[in-house]
Structures are given as C-alpha cells and as structure tokens.
Amino acid sequence: ERGFYRDVENLAAGPSELRGELQRIYAGGDRLVLTHIRLDQFRDRPIPPATLQAIEAGLAEVRRAGLKAIVRASYNQAEYMADRRIMM
Image 1 (cartoon, rainbow, N blue to C red):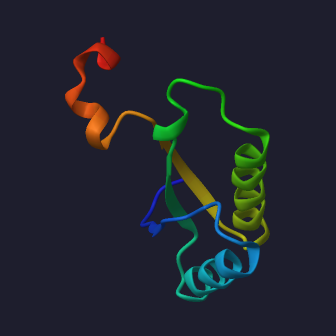
Image 2: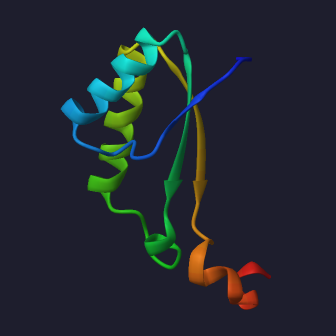
Image 3: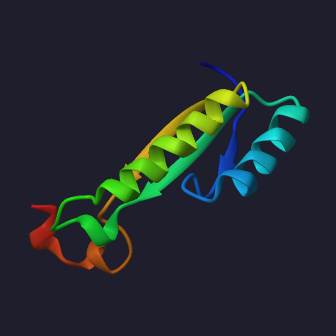
C-alpha cells in the first residue's frame, strides 16, 4: 500500500476509543495507519495471551474501519538502548 498514513498510538486501546479514532482517520480520507507496538516489558519473557488478544482485536478494528496498517513492533527502546549486551 502506498500513500500517506496517520499514526495510531495505542492499537490495544479499548475498542470504542480505537474505533472512534479510526473512524476519524477514515473520514479524513486516509486509508493507511502506522502503529508502533512497544514490547519492552516482554523482552525477556513470553508475551501474555491477553496482550496478544488485545493487539489482535486492535488489528481487527483497523480492518473493520476499512483501513490498512503498517505494524512496527519493538522491544529494545528507551533504557534498553544503552545496554549493548541486549543488542549483540
């Protein structure tokens, strides 16, 4: 998908909050959203099923709104960037 995109900060927000944001984006003429999923707290343990379900539900809301998503997941930002052992 090419084109301009709008940021969606919290893909795992509650459905009604996310739905409203996505509807505004669609109404504004955009069809592509960028979402950044921060997984810092799970860098040394499995991602809990509830977190995965919340992300999945958020992506389902994006599809229901008629939008497409660019998904960027990371677990090595903030204070972890200074720890080179994690990056090696």
